[in-house]
Length: 446
Image 1 (tube, rainbow, N blue to C red):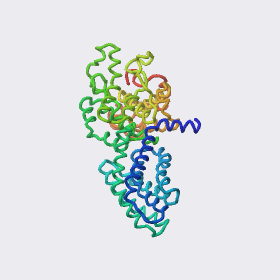
Image 2 (image 1 turned 120 degrees about the vertical axis):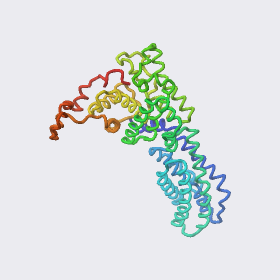
Image 3 (image 1 turned 180 degrees about the horizontal axis):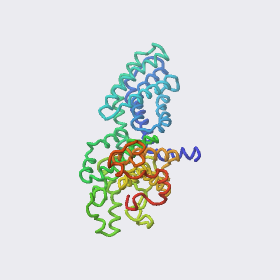
Image 4 (image 1 turned 60 degrees about the horizontal axis):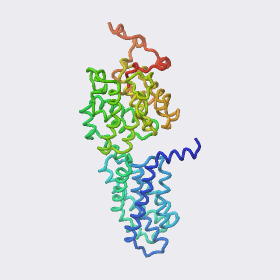
């Protein structure tokens, strides 16, 4: 892909986020121009008067906003937007260029400790006080003591304008643009979230499947640098639509008679697929945000319903799509299938878990389900390692490591134990190579 193609793809995928960045700067400029200008009345030269005015922009709060709302890949574009107001107001100078960068860096650094909305308020206040110190410091470095008091006086307004403007912009980003801010994602990932508690009570099997999927997805996201909180939230909520008819999904049947045996295949198919639309309705009702809604909508792509024999490729036996179009959506799709497949295994060995991961990733590539995600070969290798590691953590109590060969190597000869151990299992690589087209556990595993 050419550089232009990559740029076009980036702006296409991030258009909502970047539109919010542009709107944020418009809000900052209007807020600054009409509210602050009337209170800052320096008597020094015209050029310095404009620079003092530019120092009243809450750059530290904008740095906090960069950290909790935007992706790192957005920062170069957003830096250009943020530098526009002071340059328009005061013209290019060392002060109007260096001050925003110093304040943005300070805001971004202190925002790392933001864990909830209460802490965000205190961090915003701390950011305002830090800029009250940074503004006159940078001014003194450039102009000395001239008009230093007026710079300090104009900076005092940041105690109100900084936290206030930050709160307004975070609200606009979450509620108007539907952006998955870190605060929003931490709220909906909380165990105390009412919707998760309802899922746990109504469909306990689906709940624990979702918890495991969330863990697998988060580990995969961290491994390749994707949004870990978004992947965690997607894992937790991707199947909330199953609360509508929980008994029709295998994880909630607990060994009871399969209700699908009592209904027609077409009705069965409609009920299975319905959990996607029902999940989207619940996500809208509970305000989970557009990003979570898209994760729910796309977590099966247009893959076959593996409850049926996948060798029968009738269009009716596929999910309606659309396909995933972001790395986070691709990670959640793979994590969901990997967890569901692994859970159905009768032999929970490390070799079998490895085979599951390789099979699911290979199937996603072969069937075109993750073609629009943008995974590189390196991403897929890293994801494979992360997924295997995650499964070993989840099922560590069920992975059977001992074998007759292993017992002999350790020199153990406890009476009666040797005979109970199985022969040494086949190497994981050999097992994966022999797997071919057959899915682990047969066809009824998804």
